[in-house]
Amino acid sequence: MSAGDGDGASPKPRPAGPCALIIFGAAGDLTRRLLLPSLYNLAREGLLSERFAVIGVARAPLGRDEFIAQVRRGMPEVKTGAAVDWLVSRLHYVQLDFNEQAGYGRLATELEDADRTHGTAGNYLFYLATAPEYFLEVTERLGSEGLLNQTNGRWRRIVVEKPFGHNLGSARELNRGLSRIAGEEQVYRIDHYLGKETVQNILVLRFANGIFEPVWNRRYVEHVQITVAETVGVELRGGYYDHTGALRDMVPNHLLQLLTLTAMEPPSSFSPAALQNEQVKVLGAIPPLGARECGLCAVRAQYTTGALDGGPVPGYREEPRVAPDSETETYVAMKLAIDNWRWAGVPFYIRTGKRLTARNTEVVIQFRKAPLTLFRTASVTLPSANRLHIHIQPEENISLQFAAKVPGPTVTVRPVEMRFCYRDYFGRENRTGYETLLYDAMIGDASLFKRGEMIEAGWSVVEPLLQAWEQPLTPLSLYPAGSAGPEAANQLLRRDGYEWMPLK
Ligand SMILES: NC(=O)c1ccc[n+]([C@@H]2O[C@H](COP(=O)([O-])OP(=O)(O)OC[C@H]3O[C@@H](n4cnc5c(N)ncnc54)[C@H](OP(=O)(O)O)[C@@H]3O)[C@@H](O)[C@H]2O)c1
Image 1 (tube, rainbow, N blue to C red):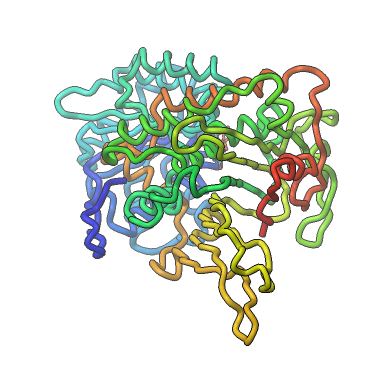
Image 2 (image 1 turned 135 degrees about the horizontal axis):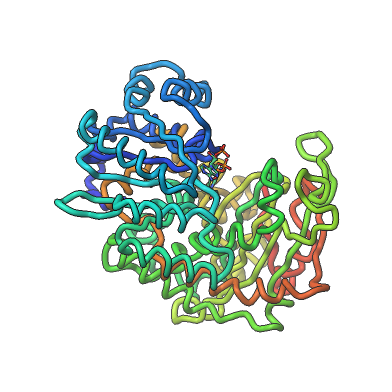
């Protein structure tokens, strides 16, 4: 992400420079569903270098042709066309077991070949689309093979997927381990939410417009709600999810990312350091939850049997590879404070859950109500507070709710909505969110990636809850699949006189 010159005519970005992208886990779900389609989109937009190659790395004993056939099968909608042919002509495959050093020698030979055949100039982007237990091991083995050495102007970078650790201690350990092998500037920790246009647009909305920032503080904002609601259950990831839960899976990364972008002070530039310094400051201003707050300000819940889209849906404990007596939460809601000058006294409510009634990711800023004394005798349809909705999923749009007079002889006030929809305005669709991130990693722009410090700050916020929830007999609320969540989460807001925004 880089700041353009802002004259309205968006300058076309230049193609990334020469490089090879090496995907560890090339037979996996992430590669098939998100990485390869993103590369296809980048190829179609002319944003990849002519001197580009992709080396898929996985365990299956495939030849190059079989790998290409597998890739084509995985992208049924783009089987043909110039961009897919262009991409396929640059695809290669190396079979290796992540644990065996010998395979890394074969990879080094393949990369030298790619440098000769495709002119990739010794610049390598290693994408670890692997289970987290391999992040350090693969990096260590790449280091031992000399593949992370940046000499003679060549760059070497590693993209590390989430989850980055499973608590504060393991995240620190992983950071320390990576720093022994690679420089911080070589490590790109991904949070794919940051690839979404609307998430980046939070910064533009706040800092490129004169009208929002003056009211973006405790004087005018009553509270903030951040929601990441999913309709899907755990699908085939039950084995992974049952040891993870909604808190670890969503809060330290996606929800706190949205929270920090919403709450941070203006950075001095778009540089990664300036952006993340401000985000880390926000996380540092969240007072650590004590034992009392863990009980009062956080809700954990799990879905039970219910119905979605007119059909029955099993409860979490009936999902494949989930323990039948599992206590893992599939929903979490929290009330957080940010103890700084801008936000003192403004509650931030965050919630995320699976198998909810609608898929919906949004940030809602609720402003303080105007005094309605003037309309004492008018018929006012509440709610009359102004709200700014920043919708991120499934549709990317921003809307502002304000009060308007209903036409007619009497003064009747009703909330109405003004809406800007990304697709209607800019006509862009079918992007995965990974395009920007892959492109940025290739051009060496780390603004949308997390520094180690930021990851640790995120884990620090949830660490007290992780510990509290490990205690036996911690309450676990239940909610039927297809509902808006547990009653306990409604109570969390009602105690303060608020309601969650409806999920729609
Ligand atoms: N999928 C998503 O939507 C998504 C979204 C965000 C983040 N992520 C993260 O991305 C990473 C990958 O997820 P995924 O869903 O793609 O996982 P996955 O479907 O299980 O794929 C893992 C890949 O790694 C390979 N692999 C596993 N062990 C190996 C070994 N010892 N040696 C060589 N290859 C090995 C697998 O090969 P085999 O087929 O031979 O087992 C497979 O190609 C995870 O960290 C996940 O948390 C995934």
